[in-house]
Amino acid sequence: MKTPILATALFLVAGVCVAAELSFEEAKAKADQTENSLAAESLKRLVEAQGGLANSAFPYCFNNTQTPPPNFTVVVEIDTEGRVARSWVDQDTPWGLCFRERMVKNFSFRPESQPFFTSFEYKNAP
Image (tube, rainbow, N blue to C red):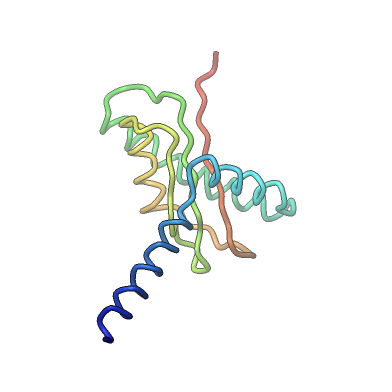
């Protein structure tokens, strides 16, 4: 009798985990809300961290794709240790996926509060 109960419990936990997954749009809204709530000094630290990432990610992704970057947005959730816990990208282009990978591997920012979402948006000048 213990096996059906355990299986039911695992199914319910798995269902909660799947239901809690955010869409790109939901994650982006959380990032906008988080960024808009930051004090000036925290926002400055975040922009500096994003700039450092961009300085290494853009050349890396250009070399990997051999194309100029299209418009893209990457959203990440940062854990208490300052590492990326989850990530989303608005377009599954080689550039967007490459930048997302670089952000997941190399972005570091210690947030003052949790949960912490931020986004990096790249738009080509018209």
